[in-house]
Image (cartoon, rainbow over all chains, first blue to last red; front, side, top):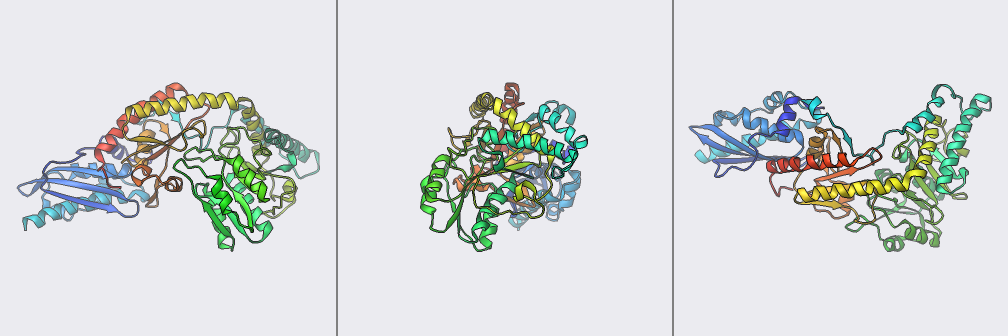
Length: 123
Length: 390
């Protein structure tokens, strides 16, 4: 298999997949090259993302990256999520092939977008 | 984890390639190290190699009910298609070509290359089942039409084209007719005279022969030029020392298919129907693409709405099942198959295209295992996927 056991596990058993009722913010990102799309929903308490859920349309690594990000960043300060880096998601997935790097980029972009939306709403 | 997941392996990608039949392999083996002469050499070593090749040519010719002199061996279906399309066009210098929107890239891109050289090209469309209307071909004909190239059956959706009707039209207008039969050779009966075919591409590795060897039937008297130049091989029609072992394998493969083609087609048609019935009874929002009746025996192409096909292929791969995706994310670029686009399949269905192609090794237990794996996989993927994004 060309993917790491961690990636395969997140693909086969995605964590936190699905809609969230009344989220505090929503963010999306799309990879124009292939149409993959990820959407994150945040529940925020005391400035921290206490619950993160996602929906994604894409290949296996894109699903796994969103799942990994939903676990990796739970509990973090929303302000920190605004500057999160795709490489951290990729490292947590134990690497991505060159032609699938976009999987981590979309997850990072969508989660940053959700964080920015929350910040904007807070003024 | 992987060894547990991979305990069962089911290969459902026979339209891509097939395993070499043991009898084919046994017949090929002496031609690597024992019978190694160049078939163009006049000494005994060369003559022995030539004999093996002659027998293979005869076997192919018998299957197609043509003369062995009308068979040219090549390196693959792609070469055969390029040879036919370019050979027919270049023999006439300039003019107009007709093909369809659902051809294999080997035909479409060869035609596009000719278009760039100054030939005119008409790509006729297909209906919702992927079928060409012979009347569209008739209407596309011009006084300067130099060749018509339409495939026998589509590898992606399995639809069998009305070749006989198109052949009649081509013959009536005196236009050479090429048929890409790579997916049907050795699977369906092929009578090139009755079908009005002037050139026909076929390949070995789709029928349990080796990869890297194929052929082209060229009707005697057809005006066609060589595309590859060099020595005097293949009656000066295709230069290059022949792949003798591969050709011997091709001959044996077609001989076997001539005997078991009908019984095998009946068996895998029943299994294909079992697969479709099983999947549609368990999975909502799934369709079968291609023509419901006129289709290849072992091909079932599913369209799963709102699921990305590559994620299904990966999920099944992790269960030891080999199928192929109708759309693929390569080099960061994903497009639905040109065949599904030509059929007018909406994007939300086309992006979830997964092809299962059955073959000799496929058993009822394999099919039941695949059905068992598909339902929870698609359900789980749909849970993560936002409805209506494509």
